[in-house]
Image (cartoon, rainbow, N blue to C red; front, side, top):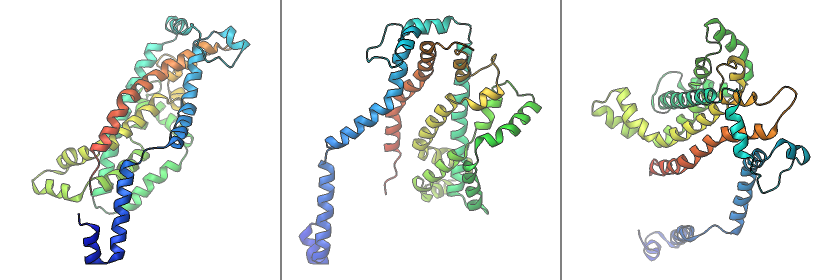
Length: 303
């Protein structure tokens, strides 16, 4: 990099001053550390985000009598958490059935959404075909349509083909999403250079092989984030499974609904079930968070 005096001699004093400001901004940015204001704001956001989980944990550690007397629990949890969890496992609700079904639905939809959305995103971002722009606009516009509007015809279709009460009726409508297509299209548009695709085609790679060996590695960071978002959405999905499934073949949110009796609600038992259903998501974030950040940094395309 040329020094500031050299730039002043060749390009003038104005260009030298601009180069000096850019150099100072880069040096200052490298040495700058977050101040107490940043940490205070992050701490407040962290407390607000963690409060529902902590509140559920405190209620799950209590009992119904204590909750009835004091709905706002103290900061020190009681010792009834494992007893409440044991009551859930010993009850007649199909807990393990719901856990297995939720795992099947969430994993299947996450994999399917990543594969199909990446295929569609690669086509919209890097292939040139007639109607590409209007078709992408149409796909994005479908996100403005409320999900509730399609429930009745979807239920009729699933009932006509005999899928009512089966997991396939929950999995199939979510194997591809408009958000996933938009997400992958925007990412591949900037992260995948045309030169890599042209080099693969010159080497004799077919369209599918080019996608698998060139586009998929470039899309890995965005695909990981999309898989995580889809997994969380499928794991916590309640509305459509509550309509199409029954009590003999439920997902985990439907199992938690069975913890609520008709005339009496034991909130300590309900919160223990909520805590039990939330624990897998927390574990996924703990183990996958660092890998997601690492994947994003490694998958960044340098200009």
